[in-house]
Picture (cartoon, rainbow, N blue to C red):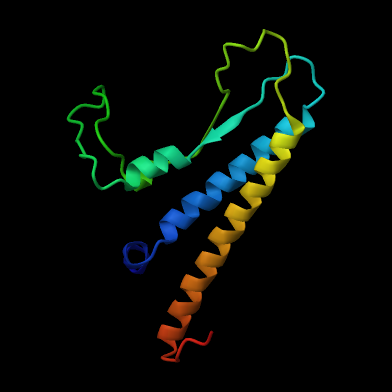
Length: 141
């Protein structure tokens, strides 16, 4: 019951999804960097932000499936949003060629670390406010 109340009253589920996506992206990028000199290695990316944006878009209609074989329609429920690793399609890339750009991977790794740190700090702030409310103390900056 308390968990449900915290989920509805805070953005903690969103921050948890963000941290999960950042951890997956960090592992994927580390794997890409480790295979920068492996012939034929195809880099992997993580899809998360677009799916999250779609789930949070209140202007889109939300449909409901009456059968599990039916296609999803409209925006997704936040609980169904998950980060997924995939091989990006590049028709210009010949078969057997390594497509890892070390500079791009390093910049994405830094961006991912910043995203993860932000989510952690946001979560810390939520718990700090909850702790102050429980103890009936004013929130100190």
